Length: 135
Image: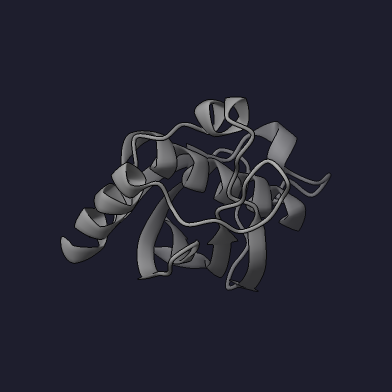
């Protein structure tokens, strides 16, 4: 299964030339991941933070295929590639106007209040597996 989320390119995403300034793509990527956890895993970041836990990015590889411009809408697509005992590998792509804009492969690690990896909570793991198997 693929989780999708449209994001419109806003003025705050752009450099003076009107194209997305590359660090803003990472903010958009984080937004897609955060909303994936809220909508699919049923585990909003605010609940993780209140419990002293989180899912920081341990690794990220990104390829920028084509620029994006102010006003365009990018369709972001997230798939769960691998679910480990305390980590998850995600593949994210952004497309707009039929053009492949970005590919991002990242690994998240579920950590406790001390920043140490810990196993996924069973309820979250069950939802992530169901999402992955629906692919």
